[in-house]
Image (cartoon, rainbow, N blue to C red):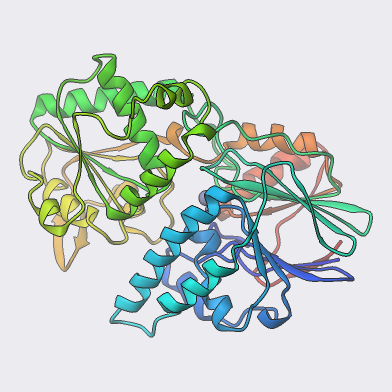
Length: 444
Ligand SMILES: [Zn+2]
Ligand SMILES: [Zn+2]
């Protein structure tokens, strides 16, 4: 079989792998490139395959860098079925509609696709699998989705064909997270296509991260500022809400106002509520008891623009969670513009910031940044809490990969440093490692 790396090759975003076997052609993910302008240009580059010839698309999870180009694939003639989990299908609905709206509203560029293309894509998402279920996708090609522990519904993909087992890790989760199970271990594989986002890091334990967040909140309130959290709509937002709920119930943070200022994250939260039976304990039990960490007295959802404008962003004592997570757009921009110049406020990054994004610029220590046409000085307290990451760190990646014990490890979905560090680690353990280039094809 042949595997072509149509995205996430020597970069984090744009996940898309094309597989050609003797009997079929399929894709694993069809994500959007995000961040640096030269990367985003790739969203318009021709696919290194013919979408008409592709029979199936296996979707690992609902993040934009894994599904954001599916409507373009429809536009270019893909008419196969999309194979995924039920929560991912639900998440895809809001993610693709939001992405299509952003495309349609863009004044700078020709839209990549329209809402109609997004609907067409959702229509094809009709082969829903449970974790562990075997699916005969084509003659001699069997596919199994397993719990990747990354976000609600996320899967890694085990493909068995032509006497070989190939595993696509998708995005692999961190351990000990409140709303997702730990990643399941993979079976023995011949080839492992492995994500490397945090391949050069070891996260602190989640309990330390929660304590760190608590201390930042207390310190900021004492100084009279706000805590601003740029948050990803999926998982991270719900997790932060859950953590704040627990801290509040345990009287570890004072009574304060918490705003979720993101219509997308609000819609995502409703999907999480619907699938709360999939949460690990104790979160599942809390929901079963009809208590809802996504609706408690401190928390306000600001759905309309008007409600958003009424948030006292220029005062103190509030926690404001807003998208987008990498600060590339959305309502977070306004809250940053108001709070970055205030030394009493804090901006807390709880997720991955890609190269070329405003979030990365702030995190890398910029003294001033441009936001909505104005130059804004950065005087606020900038905090990074990596332990809340939805991605496995080097230790988890290595331990997980050792269970698959593959003859070849192909590293994808990482920046140069992470890829290099992880490759070195695997080579030192005696594994063969390959880091493919964009559009490279390998024969398995
Ligand atoms: Zn992801
Ligand atoms: Zn990803």
